[in-house]
Length: 307
Image (cartoon, rainbow, N blue to C red; front, side, top):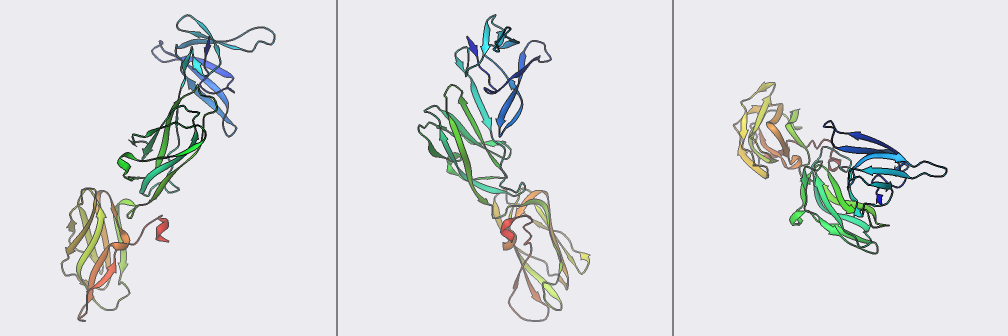
């Protein structure tokens, strides 16, 4: 009888250890060439459970024997535990497309695989696997490509994405070659508790005065808009939140006159602003004209789209 080595065929060192309750035993296996020539210690579990590992004695005898809690002795080899296929579970790292902070929209993910007609259950996980899609089963022979859609084919708003794969180890030659998510940046990719426009005269001469704002935002708590005019902070103006969906607020402002305007927008919780579309409507004092539409928040931080 055989009991499989879950860490891989190149494993050579094993250590038995028990949990603190002294009843459940486990095995640490050192595996060579786990990935790109690197090795490491992995935890093995078996069915039936293993209670001891022992190297077979004698000239040219190199087999590793495993004592099971069912009283039987097994050889440490193969892809099953006493004829029960070993379950395999791999989760990739959470890929943030090179920017950990920005929000993205994720669509389908593309998988290139040859499963040898076995089943691989594939799920997509978002925001460090805190949100998980239903996924689908891949079954292909020979090699083929599969798109994996988010649930209801709706694009998912998240900072990162990973792939979660589950299969049985009894199918020789099974391979997953590559996978790639489809994504693009959100229109308002950066979430923060405040946005600031430093003191500016907007490139205009003499006195200015305020009229209205257009403020597209994604927020769950009310926002506080504070003008500091020529060094003096004005009374905060409350902007009603948008319940977590995009909301474009159009609001009349009190008439505030000055030369230098600093603007701060803040909230108790993270919120997002569609910076290039946030506008302040102003006029020059004493000069009849149409309202000037001036940008308020154009800082996209690390966003590549801001270049």
